[in-house]
Image 1: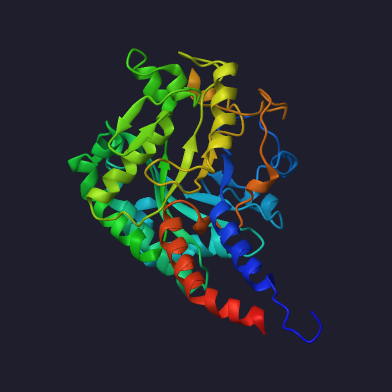
Image 2 (image 1 turned 90 degrees about the vertical axis):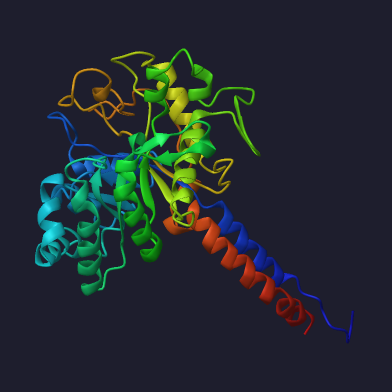
Length: 374
């Protein structure tokens, strides 16, 4: 209208689009194990990640050949600390400084480190006592080098003494001795807890109590009702049992990243290509939904990239998505839209950061409306 004010929706649309991006980010990565003598060169593996839209990687130790291959790739990386190094890293800050300089600072920022995993599935156990002090020393060493990388540890769900129903999830007394202080540190540092979630093993050990469809994400009906929460798949139930255990020690605000999940294609009970393909594809399709207890996008890593011929006989050798010749074990599709733009906007961080985003949006909304009327 000539001479009148033009009402513009652009500022409001911008705010809505920002919130939409914040609520939709999630991602699937793949664990890259090296326990084999016939695996492709790391540079070829990085190319394989890219060509299949696998946009994040986890390695179990700071292999320098892999780190060199990742330079400039923009593939977010979880890098593990080898168990043999834990005691020295826990007891000696100079050892942590040397580790950071050699394995992280020397490759940053051309390698996109997202998390450092201090130990894998060692709580509870003989090495558990070293996890928290090693995390603290590595975090201190990173800060001294001006590096902002999250430091955590990766646990197996054997830390849970109870998990059914999911709301009854609780740590074993032995595990709680370690988990409670670790979670308090993670809450302070802003780092997520890394958790390995394997419905396969739960199903394999309890086939009379657990339906295959419940383990494979294919159940058409609700299988477990737990108060206000309904479960159609075992993955959600296992993850929510972990959240419940964390809540019981007062750390509901810590996020969880699923650092391993997968299904073997050979070598054991219910281990076949059909089940492996079904599980992993459904996991990829599911992570954007979250769980009943935490309906926010999940960051998860499939185990594993390759069948590794130097692992133990049986299923351990057969979790791979690809054969060592780089041919797929079975077809699987990764969405290019699942890139991990900001790993810290998913899952438990969703609660803290999204509440902050919502609060800010409520404050800004009237100003944007007024601005649009100018």
